[in-house]
Length: 276
Image 1 (cartoon, rainbow, N blue to C red):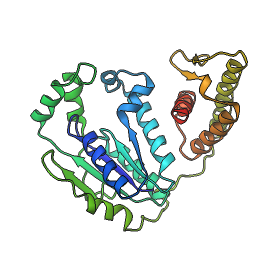
Image 2 (cartoon, one colour; image 1 turned 90 degrees about the horizontal axis):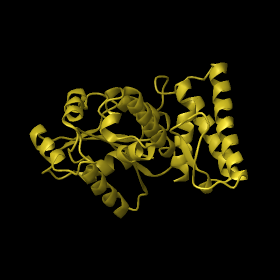
Image 3 (cartoon, rainbow, N blue to C red; image 1 turned 60 degrees about the vertical axis):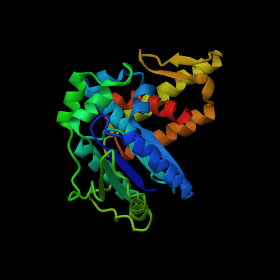
């Protein structure tokens, strides 16, 4: 149910803290689910540096992360979002989502000296490091969390050489009541009949193409018609799975409407993520 949002500039130790928190909460007999920005980028087939130079691709990844997080905060587990999460508006959206689901939340800001951060980045493998252009852009764009903002609070700041107060984080998440939903955090009813029609037709078309591929006894990754970069492993999905996942995606999209042009790509990504 609770959510921990990790945030910080590149190479500030977010993933290290994520693993530290995971081990701590597992010892407390809590189920832990990690939603990783790096893993989501890899699954999407995008190159990391190109993501942050293309606002549409970056927005697409944020939409997938938000969808993945809110899919899990409705159950009785702990979700840790490991990523840059540098946009305060995105953190606010997550706050609204957890609040509407009556879940507690906290933010952990991994802080680090910029020169030290760049040295760590520069020592990484070529496939893992940020280019100087992208690194500088991300540092410039970074919107530091503020504990006075309700969507960033409670806020914990941690430097690489400091010990994380995990007991206090545990108390914050599990010993306090979640904030009550209000009009600002509840989703307004969806009224666009065009959107509902597009949502129904787009998902139905993709499901039909996958069923057709299965009937042709195709195996492995199959391209979704009309989308050059969208593939799904048809051997991993059954027809009942498709129907169930389509219903789930439609229900979620009615409450959290995506851009109409992204319905199909987000649905395919949702299928791949769910099947994985």
